Amino acid sequence: MKAILVNNPFEVEIKEVPKPEINDEKDVIIKVIAGGICGSDVGIYNGTNSLATYPRIIGHEFGGIVEAVGDMVTKVKVGDLVAVDNVNSCGTCYACRTGHHNVCSTVEVTGVHRDGGFAEYVKTTEANAYKVTGDKINPLHIALVEPYSIGVEVNERGRITKGDKVLVMGSGPIGIAVMQVAKSRGAEVMMTDLVNNRLELATSMGADRVVNVGQENLADAVREFTDGEGIPVVVDSVCIPKSLEEALELVSPAGRIVVLGTGNKPSEIAQVAITKKGADVVGSRLNNYRFPEVIELLESGVLTPEKMHTHTFEFTDVKAALEEVMNNKDEVCKAVLTF
Image (cartoon, rainbow, N blue to C red; front, side):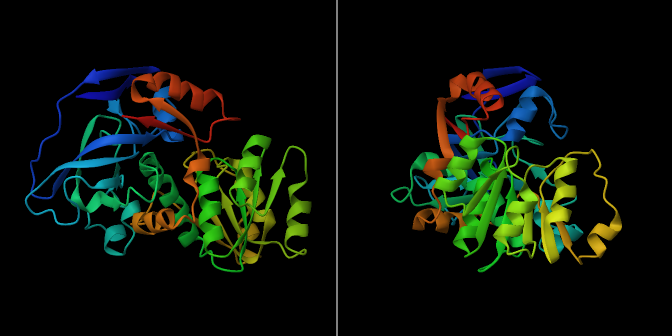
């Protein structure tokens, strides 16, 4: 079978590799039909993802049709359309024992720490395969279940609920996923960016207020949006040192800040900035068994992945797809590879 392999930074190829086989009674073999390109895939391609090792079959947003199952698999069957969770945990460490397997001490992400889903066939476990009703969503949008699961996880970490006013900093795919999930919970959401096309997309997908921070003062906009109270929940999907500092300035007393960044450059934050407001600052990584909620929201029509999905490429054109995502951020929200 063919798979997308990144041998070294900027060296990507379509390579013949062995087709996976059933080796365990809980194995599931999937014929991949769609895969979404994420920033971390771009990071592996251009050498900026510090967590990846080479060579690597990339891809952690993907799904397809079940082709074969192990003898003890009951959750899915041959012919089912499934999305695949990319979180692989040990099940025994402190994080796993306390219900946070997404930050397992030895977590491995499919497509980053182990070979991923950008291949014609993939093997996963029964636990990581989630059935999707194909007549209710476009089958290509199974590739977007995973990014929306990040949105659900962020909402859980930020305890976002009906009546909350939320600031999402950054209107890329994850920011938009966070916003749509927050809207489904009854929150009002303000979004920021430097790119008007992204802000227009955010508005079309449900954002209540958008701010181009290159043209408008964000602090003034927040005061207007919250009647001078400060924003109860800030989600930092910009993920640079300055954005965390700004989040602490904008959050209301007793507010919550959710950070998604994995960069290692420090922010300049005095402890008093957190203490005086009694602010909760939490990290959010991957997802913690959030696929069922995403699939329910997709099948009910609450989420609109067709607007997030802006570009489609055949998997054999992966280099062009990666370059497009990397170099045309004004136009690309989510690019999907077809297999």
